[in-house]
Amino acid sequence: MKSVNIFDGIFIVVYFLIIMGIGLYFMKVNKGGKEYFTGGSMIPWWMSGISLYMGNFSAWIFTGAAGFAYTSGWFTILYLAVGPVAYLAGSHLTAKLWRRTRSISPLQYIQTRYNLGTQQLMSGVIATNFILSAGVQLASTCKLFAPIIGIDMTIIVLIIGSIVLLHNMLGGLWGDMAMDVVQGVVLLGITFTVMPLSLGLIGGFGELLRAMPPVSFDQTYNGVHYTQHWLVAILIITSVGFAAGGAQRFYSVRDEKSARRVGRLAALLACSVPLVFGIPPLVAKVYWPDLSQVDFFKPFIGKNPQDLVFVGLVFKLLPHGLIGVFIAAMLAATMTTLSTVYNMVSSIISHDMYKGVIKPDLSDGALLKVGRITSLCLGLIVMGLAITFIHSTFGLFNQMQAFFTLFNIPVTVPLAFGLIFRRIPKWAALGSILWSLIMGAAARYLLGWDIGPQVYLSTILSFGVLLSSSYVAELYRTRKPLLWSISLLISAVLATVFALSPGAAAAPWQIAAAIACALVLGPTLVPLARLFTRDTDEEKEEILRFYAKLDTPVDVQAEVFGAGRRQVATLPVVGRTIVFLGVLVGMAFLNTLGTGETIAVIAMMTILLGFGGTLWIAGRRVRMREAREIALAPDPAP
Image 1 (cartoon, one colour):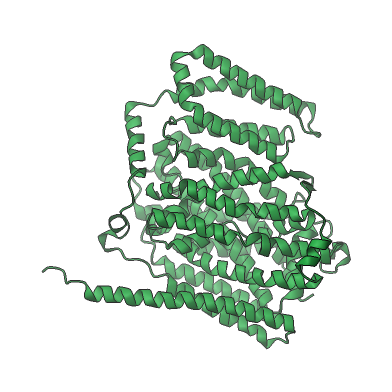
Image 2: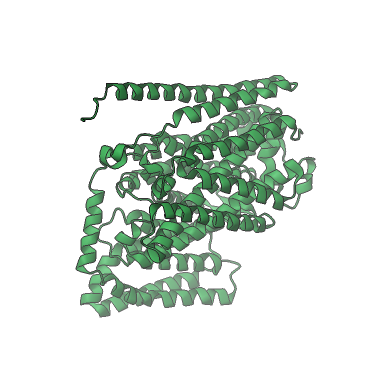
């Protein structure tokens, strides 16, 4: 197989320079915290939609997910096919409502809708989840780059982590989203090129269907069991997750219609994922049934070599230059995800925690400085985690699943559905988070339940506490003995379920501890109910004002373009950047190319030049139209 040469190195270096240039270009847009965290609500919907799609991809999809696909076959295709449904469901639930919150932070409304204590708890859980997941994403990238470039993995972590961090601190949300578009085109271009070339190795898609065994819903990967219940759990988590986690992409656009378009575009792009990301690892399974016999994988035997099958195909199929494109695409995807995490977690810590509790009178300019300092600290923490994860034998796929399935439901259900259900008391989210998180952790890590049943339990408890909170509050006021009976019944049911369904590897002390959690948790419903009754008339009026805001459409001219603000020009700079990358890909013709390699280079250049040129021309037309409007506008009165 090939290795990286000078052409690939030039592309990677130039790509990094482009990333820094985009960050510097959009640095001038950030006049304060609102522009840094929301883009001033002037991000074009198509840019935000691509960014929402790209925010869920990094080198992990080329490593951890590819390794899982190599092992589990068609089961992974079903897993990847969940994405489009989840994007549509999540955006349908909350896109319009998020835009009407007029937020600067995904949790800004929580203090109003719930209370300060709930906001701080939710902020802490979300930040923890995102930081841990970001560590896995960075580790995924570095696991690939160490054998490719021949540099120690720890050094790779420090280099790549620092570049991502610098880019995020400079450009804010504008820089992130502009780079998302560039990265999205590069990523889809390279994967749409690799997929048909890989099928050519085995004689086409028909041969893949013949060679691969039928789908199995009973998979064990590095000691973790996956079934059809896991697929259902992923659908639940991602649908609710996009309804809550897509907040920044929804409220950064100009109006409600644009917010809905964001989700639809992300869903459309996600339809490509099973094909371009799922098929190549299956081809690798047919082409390389025994990785221990392939020289490229021999150094990694015993270290999850299946994580590198996508990379192996790239090095076999693509010419030099396009290999550099692939390496840059992996870097780009990781940078998208990490930048999204840094921006979102930074806004949570700086706005919701620091300004919300420590310094309420913090100015917008000072908030911007705090946000950048917070991003720096987050980057250092994530780099430390990546160094730890990269040496773990648990596997990148399993690490991501552990964090993703434990933390998401407890926080995303109250975060998303607090926008929808209007009778929920202010303290209800606190009970929902605690019950869902504690019982989910007990079921998974004490009893050893599979992920699917664990997520079912967390979801039932989260919605159960949230939706019944007003009824529970009424019981506390009028029928307290009945409330005690219900709480004890819940304890008995949960304890019985835990006692009858321990995992095969659960020790007696773990079963006892899980039952104890159930017995202790149930009676906490009574003190929680007491909290549910504490909403004052003033607080109820505040909630009514909040929902009145959600019922009020966004006035784009007054709220977005007021005080003479103008739309930031994004099409020309993004278009020129993609065109430049297309020209750079032409360097591959300086190599001696085979027929298949020539077709790959032409296809990649066509994608980049076509898309980039379209954006460039569209940007010029927008500028010409704006110039005509300014020329025809009446002069201001003297």
